[in-house]
Image (cartoon, rainbow, N blue to C red):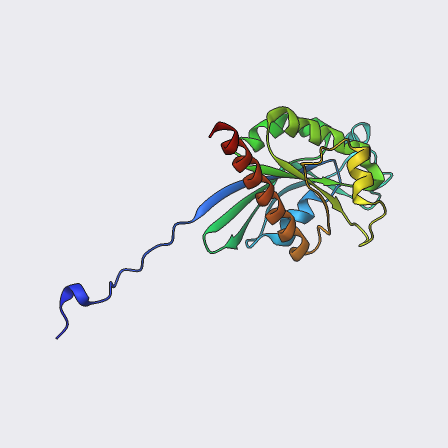
Length: 202
């Protein structure tokens, strides 16, 4: 006969899940919406609007001629990296007239992925300065729009004056695998920074 204390529990124990907020930032048309959509386990929430003549004074379409919509608030997605790790992804709007939303979007974020387009590399400085000034850890991911790396990673690092401690990597924002690896690299970078800070205070 089996006693009550020996019987297996009929109530399943819930695993402790850690939820983390990650921001996906970068210039207009750099691939933020695509990045979030490629990896999200849920249908991503998008706030895209058809571009009108009003956009012409803000952003040039010379290097992104096929782009017809723009994010006006944010993109939102969710991805489970491990059984106990859930990432909430918030993509920032790229057009300058919507930058005032960035401070609200990054509140509580663990870190950020900054997407870079080597055809418009100078447009990346604004995002880098934003996260640097707020002390938010970030990685820079060079989006391979056509699957080809046109400039060496170290050349991009030098052109953007990025510190050696900040990861710079390549990523095809259309593919789930590379996007997931970029997010994992960001988490590794954040953990390394936390450990470094702990070592200073111990």
